[in-house]
Length: 77
Image 1 (cartoon, rainbow, N blue to C red):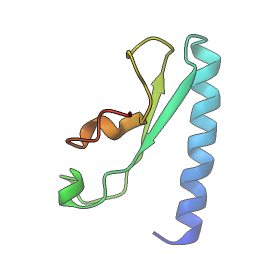
Image 2 (cartoon, helix red, strand yellow):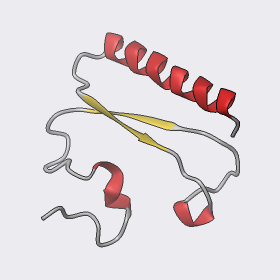
Image 3 (cartoon, helix red, strand yellow):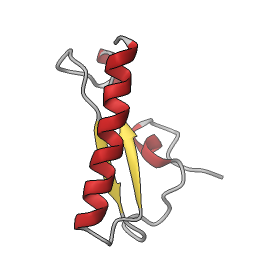
Image 4 (cartoon, rainbow, N blue to C red):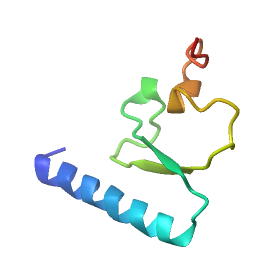
């Protein structure tokens, strides 16, 4: 991606975050994910970004964020 595209994605994430928080006051955090390359799980080769709303208590231990997709990295000790 070129810098203007990166800037546009960052602006979009901020706008969507604000919009989501206005609609649902139970959301307390977000994960942002991008799958880049087949070994990272990308199946359609284009740019897209996941903005994932999160809530307190939805998982027992949220430390590590989206690390749960990496075998042997799910546990913080």
